[in-house]
Length: 246
View 1: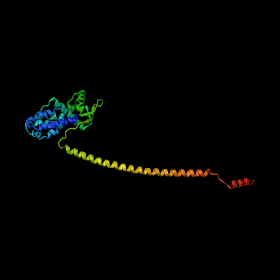
View 2 (view 1 turned 135 degrees about the horizontal axis):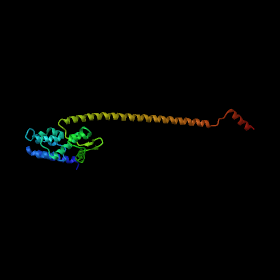
View 3 (view 1 turned 90 degrees about the vertical axis):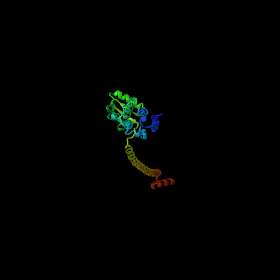
View 4 (view 1 turned 60 degrees about the horizontal axis):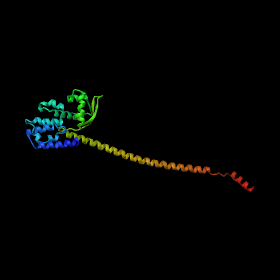
């Protein structure tokens, strides 16, 4: 089972669980979901009405926690930890993995210094171990560690949940892309038609050249034939007649 199939099953499982209970009973499920090593998407769990009902209650920090794991980073947690519960070791690891996914969306070349700052990592060895063991082996990113340039070159990164309001922007981006693609397709079709027409012109020109060449060959052959025939002059005729008389 690949990571997407496993994640889909986990989402369905957690959605069913939180849909069946309310209030403080949701807390252990939220803690479990945000600690699960195979779950990296939380928007569907957030969308369950029972979860939304935590807003404004004494348990609202767990709604904030789920929102953090859906859209936030390790830096966001450090800046807002007063409104959030303390994280377990597994949750810290998960949030740092999610931070890598967020950074990979902004740039395909991530400098080591920037990564160490964002992840609170003190040395390159620790950073590279994290990228290899906790990110690449987990299947959430693929890339190349460039020790010479001190950067991580991202080749693939799993997507994160969309923030509220991002869907409209994404739809507009896709609409613009489709418009550009349509224009490009029209240009390609015009180029193909032009190439086809030029091909026909070339074929016609080639045929004309071949016909002219054939005419030239025939003309040269005819002249050569005329040149090789014996030429009877009046002097030659007279001599032949005298010979016959003698």
